[in-house]
Amino acid sequence: MRKESSIHGQWSSKLVFILAATGSAVGLGNIWRFPYIAGEHGGGAFVLVYLLCILLIGLPIMMAEILIGRRGRQSPINTMTALAREEGLSRGWGLMGWMGVVAGFLILSYYSVIAGWALSYVFRAGTGSFTGLDAQGVQAMFEGLVADPERLLAWHTVFMCMTLIVVARGVRSGLEQAVKFLMPLLLLMLVLLVGYAMAEGHFMEGLRFMFTPDFSKLTGNAVLVAMGQAFFTLSLGMGAIMIYGSYLSSRASIARTSATVVGADTLVAILAGLAIFPIVFAAGLEPSQGPGLIFVSLPLAFAQMPGGVLFGTVFFVLLVVAAWTSSISLMEPAVTYLVENRGMTRVSAATLVAVLSWLLGVGTVLSFNHWSGYTLFDMTFFGAVDYLTSNILLPLGGLLIALFVGWRMTERSVASELDVQRPALFRTWYYLLRFVAPIGILLVFLRAINVI
Image (cartoon, rainbow, N blue to C red; front, side, top):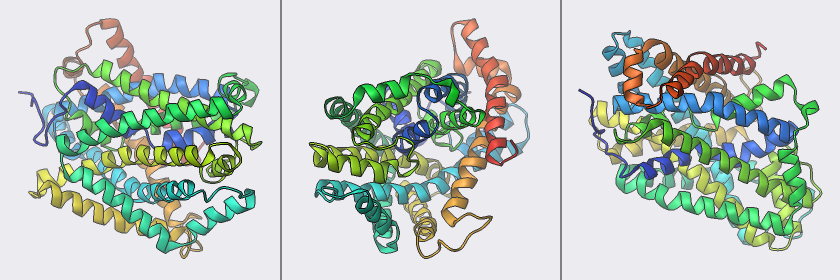
């Protein structure tokens, strides 16, 4: 007998699930990472490959992860254990749930620190601190921030508390109320910034850069980077989409809701590029500035442009909101496990996860200053945690999701939960999940560990 709802609650509507899952997927990966890696790999051709990877790998894996979550209706750990038992499989599949929960916990620890940078920049932009600065001045401002552990720790603490407040309030009163307010706000701010880029930036130049493919700039490495970005931007393999799927009504179509979430997430990434590149071009800067594009190049651009104080503030508020909607989904899987298995109240569980993640985040704070000289395998503490999660735990998690649903669950169980009315669509999805997605993820994984 299938469970109709999770003990933790249920989304009030399909729209709320779409907002929540999109909020989980939309984060620093879309607004910070996507524009700079698109810039590094030549723009249009990279964007085209990215969109294909989203369709062929991202969407099938997302549908599979939501399917697992809704069928199990528990924390990722308990869900995987229960489904493995139901399918007559080894209890070892429960380790897949553990990997997701641990990955989300680890990512939250450093995500909160980076989001703290964005919080800091909201106030810098709002008070006009960028005005009149040249490139050296903006660079010095950023370097001064990351070199100051006390300031980083303060912003890290503020952001972690913001996340804790939402998660502690539960599914309906916390997560749902937050995404119903924050996601429309995020979209409104993004549209405002695109409008600003059209009015004050070199919009046509940005448009050509993003949508005119130059395949001479498309290397094999760029294809693998696009594949990796398509996978990571959707929050797959970290338990977040699985736990959100467990709150989804049995009547909602997994295929349609997944397609909507993937479409909305991709739209945000494209809009972020359309907002950022015209502003960068108008300031005479290079789009291939790397990770510093957001915290160095854009402040410099806003400093030179009309309305830069207002729209610079809007941009960094947007970045904080995107990070916030993601961070609440990163905390949720660990919290649900503690409530289910340790008998803790939701407030106690959320507080414990927040405190432990905050403590781990102190390592990331210090890796930019006092601990910067200490390395493990030529990586700082932050670099090591980021490498472990992004390059090992998430690809492995995604690969195991594809293998579990595509090869270990019975086709009858999968088809009954997915409930796709058109057989041709089901067969296409099933083929992509069983063959295309695992091969794509394996290539990303091998590239990440420097095998290819």
